[in-house]
Amino acid sequence: MSSIPTREVARRAFAHEYNDASYTFKESDDERAPVYALLLTGERANRVFIVGTLTETEDIGEDSEYWRGRIVDPTGTFFTYAGQYQPEAASALRDIEPPAYVAVVGKPRTFETDDGDVNVSVRPESINVVDAETRDRWVVETADRTLDRIERFDAEGNEYGSMADEQYDLPLAEYKQAAVEALQSLEAEDGESDEPAKVET
Image 1 (cartoon, rainbow, N blue to C red):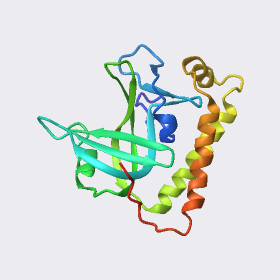
Image 2: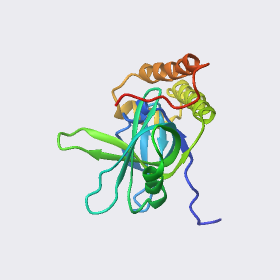
Image 3: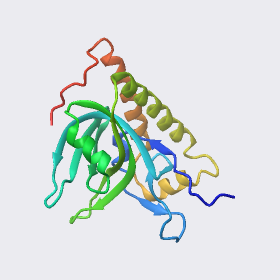
Image 4: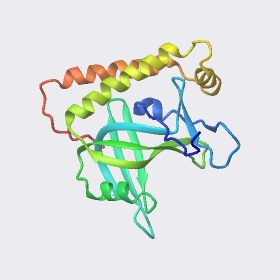
């Protein structure tokens, strides 16, 4: 049996759910074991796949470049950060001119603020410009996955559903509503321009 670690599946989640996924865990004591974010709909995520409108980029580094990107989907905003250890992603954030549709694969990162809040962001492995059709397909597939997870949440043997129930005190109906509204937002956009809209910041 091969000892080469396989790459984790990149999970799809809307910003509304992702930003609430503040609980992280490992499934073994090995210091190299993957760290998972626990999605509120009952799934673990070591990697995520997101698509949205890159509305803003900024180099917030002091001694070296450290780029922050603001990416908006129909439910909210993702923040992604890339520096010297993510050179390709940092280069993408430097070069892409907002607004633009982008697809990002990366790892969940949590940071506890001084007042005890937990901020959730994405440490990108890759950032690529995509077209409106790709963005729309991502919204549809992410809504489907979200609704599937909610349907299986209370199923017997769903350990991540049980874990989410234990760790979070937020109603699942919120995430169902967000998924439905994301789909409705696509219908509202039908017939409009394929260019990413300017988003108020």
